[in-house]
Every structure is written in C-alpha cells, then in structure tokens.
Image (cartoon, rainbow, N blue to C red; front, top):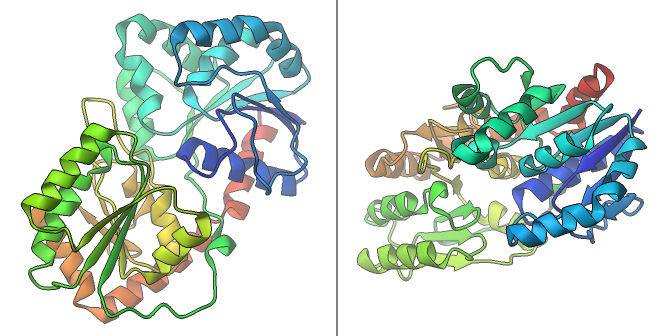
Length: 367
C-alpha cells in the first residue's frame, strides 16, 4: 500500500503543515510507504527521508499563476499519482486537483475548518466542489463541528467520518521549573478575527481588576494588519499596554516554554461571515500536553478538543463576561487548575499521534 499525500507545505508554522508533518511522520513509523506532492520544498528535520516533489501550485497566489503552474506540471502530477494506491489530500483546496488528475485511484480528503466549506459558499465553485466531495472514497473531518458544517451544504453526503487531530505528546514534555511572580495567560494562533482575540482581550480587561500584574501573551503571525490594529486599539482602550504582549515568529522550543510558564491557555474562537470557523484547535491539546487548563468556546471544533470541566472550560462565543469569569475561576482556584491540568495531560496522551495514526491506517486498509 502506497499513499500519495497532497500538501501545501511540510511546516510546523501553520495548521495544515503541522497536521501533514505529524501524520506523515507517524505513518512512516508504522511502515506506510508514501510520497508527498507539495507547493513548497520542506526543511523539516523530522522527515529526512521523505520523497517530496514540489509540483503543486501554491495556494495563496494570483489565480492565473496558479493555473499556469497546474498546467505546466499536470502530467508530472498525474504520473506521480499513478505510482500510488491511494491519494490523500491534506489541504482542502487540493481536492480539486485530485479530482481532475485521478482516474483510477481512490481519493481521501481531510477537511479541517474554514476551507472545508469556503468553496461551497461560492456560487461559481459550489457545484464543482460538491462533485469533488462526492467522488471522494472517504472524507475525514477533524471534528464533529466540521462534519456538521459540510452536511449543511451537502446534506446527502454519505462518505464522512471523524478523526480528531492528534498531538505529539512527548515533544511537549520538558524538565525545568517555571516559577513566576505574575499570573500568565497564553493564546496561540494567527491574528485573524475567527480566533476571537478581541473577545479575549476584552475579558482580560475585567480580569486585571483582580490580578493587576497579569500578563497575557498572544503568539501568532500578524499578517492581518487591519485586525492587528483593531486589537491594539482595544489594548489602549482598556489601558492594558503593560498586560498584553504580542509575539510572532516564536521558535518551537520557546513556544513550549510559554505554555509551561502560563497558568492557563485561552482561545475564544467565533463563527465569522458564515464560513470562517475553528475546525478543532490543536493548540488546546498542546497546552494540555504541558499540563495546563484550557478555555475555549462552544459552537466550533473546540467542543471536540475540550471536554467541559474535565480538561478545560467551554464558554459561549462573544461572551466577554462569561469568559472573564472562567479565567478568574481557574486563576483563583489552584485545586481546580491542578485537577484540570492533570486531566489535560491524560486527554493529550489519549490524543497522541501514535494512537490517532492507527485510525488513519484503518481507513487506508479499508479503502
């Protein structure tokens, strides 16, 4: 059995890339034969022997350049795919390429979040992507919420299954003491509105009334300048300049230290503009793997990542008051924080990639 993976890039700096790296790495440990088609040549030390071919068009470029790259490499892509038994699309937009190129090979598509339904919301793509999804042998959704969102668009789709995201648990186990004289809260994720940072910062404004020395670290790329400026205005509005710290391009080792130095992890996603949503929230599992309680929201994939009152707390979307109360509840109750943190470690171990990959291999064998 040989799998051909279609990925944007093998990188730990974004959700698609991190998912691809971990799935492929753990498939390799299970002696699964594979090759990778990508748009950007990877430099991941964890995957030294990967057979990778940079033949796919980059996703976020001019559509005409994208079309040129596809036409230029079309027959090369088809030839490479013909050497595999199964084609597994790991980034939703490449589902269309698999649909156009594959003739006799079964197609699997992983649906994450926003891009799972983005094309289905565009009238000129809806029919085409409906056929792409219907042709797939199996569609793997990373959460129940993602599955439900797809079924709202294509109610008769009957090839869906759910496999939650995994976490590389051992990577997040480090030695050392991280004592601090401040209360520390951390969020991780790109600065985009669906992450709900405008809600979490506003909630922090309430929390600092009780914990004036609190530090709130927001770690993520700041390419969305308009939203970043909006967040900075909220910080100024509530006089939080000494409390809120924005960071980007944080190395993996430093990110893990931020998790350990924190008292809790906070991410309050919201549903934006009809199709932008958090598909799962791998960062919740990463924080859990470090023994930290987490806070997320109902109405998104976080409901699969967080079992309320077990490994974290769930609050309603856009609810500043409820969010601030949840934060204070954990910060002011050390026993609760410890229990949820310990449960979080167990939860992360149950979602370790060494366990999750077995579910994928079962799908491959039954395809």
